[in-house]
Amino acid sequence: MWTTRPDLPKGHIDLGEFVIKCITKDDKDSAFTRKIYDVVYVDQDTYSVLQIFKSELHPSVYKLQSGEKEGLSLYGILNHCRCKFGSKLLRQWFLRPTRDLAVLNRRQEVVRFFSCPRNSDSLNTLQSSLRNIRNMPTLLRSMSLSHTKVSDWQGLYKTVCIRDTVRSLPQSIQLFQEISEGFSDDLYYIASLISRVVDFEGSLAENRFTVKPNVDPAIDEKKRRMMGLSDFLTDVAHRELEHLDTCIPSCCVIYIPLIGFLLSVPRLPSMVEKEDFEIEGLDFMFLSEERLHYRSQRTNELDDLLGDLHCDTKGQAMSHALNHSSGHSLVLIDEFGKGTNTVDGLSLLAASISHWLKRVPAEVPHILLATNFHSLLQLGLLPSSGLLSLLTLETAVDGDELVFLYQLKEGICRFSYAANFATLADLPPSLVQRGVAESYTTHTDYYTFYNPNEFHSFPLWNVHVKKFLCVDLEDQSVDLQRYMKEELLPSGGDLL
Image (tube, rainbow, N blue to C red):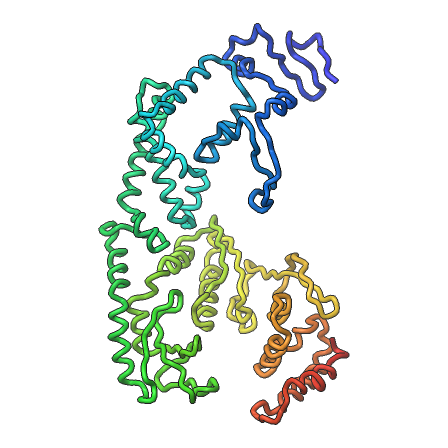
């Protein structure tokens, strides 16, 4: 309900919590009220009867979040906009139609210009630029975080190039004049800077951001190294082969981002067990596609000489956090040490945290660290400090099912739930059981796979572990599947 009050000025209405001013013909001369007064009100029935908008279900509901698309409507027929911002503006024009002749004449002036066939080239050029318009605040924020794609840089370049396109159009048309004046010379500088730095053709060919030559000597040097890396590694491989056993027919030196340079040799028929992979003077890394990969003295020298050609920036970003963070900084760390030797990653992480904790408390940044390096605490690698808070995600066990509660609590994660995750990922049960069996032999937290909350059962588990360790896995007559199914697992049934 609304009422008028004698203490209110003429034309005002009391709505309880709000007081509004009615727009009258006498008010239409003011700038604000004139805009409202000139808006034509159209009710929903009129929109429906005239079929200005028409929504219908999309044949594929996965293509649109709402599951709807614009059907046969006046808006759909007239919408030739090349970017979503233009489509939204056109919809606003239909939702708030104006009767201001100055505004209508201004729009018709532009429509008349682009409807003329002789201006089709200008129309196509402008549409090509408009198609690449992005949300500038979001795009610039992504660029500051180095999360942009090549298409984002291309979109930014074509967006700022709209200035030159519009300035080539007749400035007698009011809209073109306003756009030309609104686009500052800074945009021209940005466009020229992007064109001098970004190699768009090379970026599209290589599917990654590529810088043009002669922009940065350091980048040019890395490119030169990468281009000559193949022939160089072939020469290194020939020298490595001279020092290998004659039974190894061939080898090659490869480069893997985040890992570095490795010596790769084919797996021989005699190389069956892991012990057979050992080669004097080489450090075995991993087996992949029937090829053994090692680190040698020469590959280590290549790592020191050339470094990680693809991923130097990531290392510079950790170093940046260590050297430039302050008490006002927020440092987020995840996947620390990915791609490095476990001991190296663990040592670097412990050293980084210790470095921060040794600072004056006011200069210690706020750090959020998520890591699987549980040995940080088990080996006592971190100094005692009141600034250090340990948190873990709470879990519960329902029978033999692990339930994630998605709640943080004080404490640390003492167990590995790798087998549980493997089961949730629908890995074959035989594979999961084999993983559990191998964890027994390495003295991993074997008792936690089943029920990590029942610590009282640990002595009984110990008995079964010792029993299992007595099995000779090298004995071909031992049926491990039968032993696990009929002897070991049933005997532990009371503990599950």
